[in-house]
Image (cartoon, rainbow, N blue to C red; front, side, top):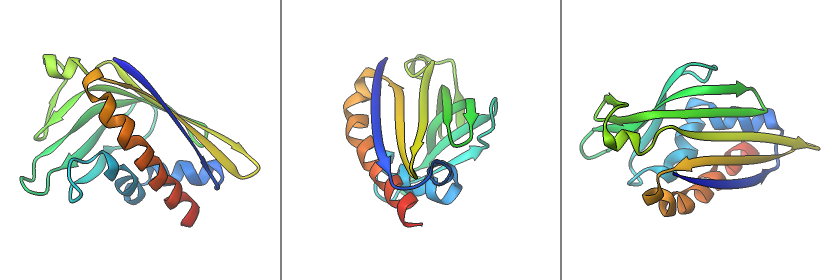
Length: 155
């Protein structure tokens, strides 16, 4: 497992950044950077409350198949900190937390820290990822964060 770190300054209060990051419509926009094709869709099934099971789902537009992550919200302090614990993978709608493929990803955490000063929020991201996907995520995260910044600043 490799740990990746990212940060971005967003000219918006932490409350606005937090809301933009988690709301259904804007979540689907900023996470497109992680989709395999530009026409793929991504969304969340579940809720963001602490202890809740949540599925991060991407749909292939050609096949309609769903893939993604089976996760749990380890912590959610609104406007301050969100921690997601990835427990397994979602493969065509089936949750897999026990196979060798799923175990390559778990346990893995995705942590978001919001630090606001004078109406500007620094968003810090710490992500655990499988070694073989690190390069892909190193490229996708900055694109995703730029989109999140655009959405939060221009809404």
